[in-house]
Each structure stands twice: as structure tokens, then as C-alpha cells.
Image 1 (cartoon, helix red, strand yellow):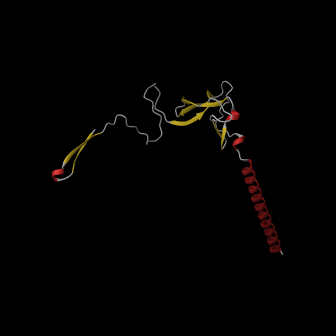
Image 2 (spheres, rainbow, N blue to C red):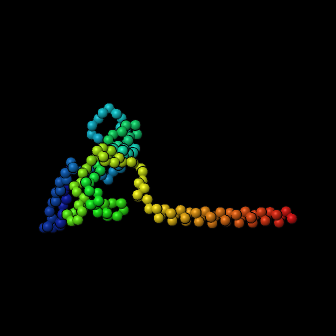
Image 3 (tube, rainbow, N blue to C red):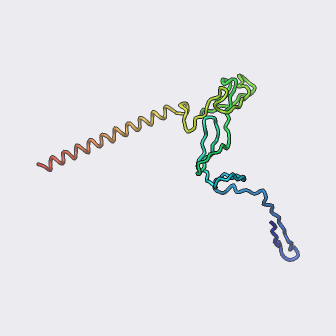
Length: 167
């Protein structure tokens, strides 16, 4: 596509031409959609969900009931796990050349060769902060006790009022 414009006035008047090549432009700002340029006889369908299975395969599900593997997650393993450097939040990084070394990283797909499986939509117990959970439990218990006492007092008051009305 070519655009031309006149720039300037009087003796400084020049014609400016701009050529725009749109062959490599994308539509990344559009709504999420998986595009495939091949046809297989199936009708057009919309992506409905992504799931990760226990082998780390990223599986796309479509509204026509079909599924397709879109990728594979890998797990990193180290020969010397004691040499990893804790970085907080249950995260670690490989150690450098000083002290105890973690060794080279070994990449493998999940659920194979002694590597653990991936459990989608689960939380490891090590990710739970027991202290904050116990504090939340104590707060909820105290709120329950306070509300229970308020209900008892209201019930006793209503019974007393009902007895006085009857006299």
C-alpha cells in the first residue's frame, strides 16, 4: 500500500511518499483464537479450554468435542538438589561456581525416567502457609462465637418480651 502527501508550503513544498508493506502484519490485539491454515473436513470450532495432563502436555479443547496437543511442558532436574540456591516462595536457582554446585540441569518430560508427574489444578502442601491459615481459622472461630452469643441474647430477649406480653 502506498500513501502520498504534500508537506510544507511555498518553495519548501515537497511530495512525500510512504510505502507500507503489510505482508508480515499480525492481529495480536484481536480476541484469543487458535488459527490453523490447514483444512481437515471438520467444521469451524471455537477454543473452549486448555488443560495440562499428568505428562505435561498442553491440550486444547474445542466446542466440537475435539482436542489437540498444543505443547509439552518439561521439568528441570539436578544431580545435586542440595546445591540449589533458595530464592524464596518455594523457588530455587542453579548455583554458580562457588561452594556446593547443583550440577547441570537435566530436562525431561513429566512422568518419565524418575521425573515426577504434573498434577493439574492441585496445590502442594508445601505451598500452604500454615501460620496464616491457623490465624484465619482462629478469626473465623471468634466471629462464629460472637455471632452465636448475639443470637442467644436476641432469642432470650424475644422470649422475655413474649412472656411480658402474655401477662
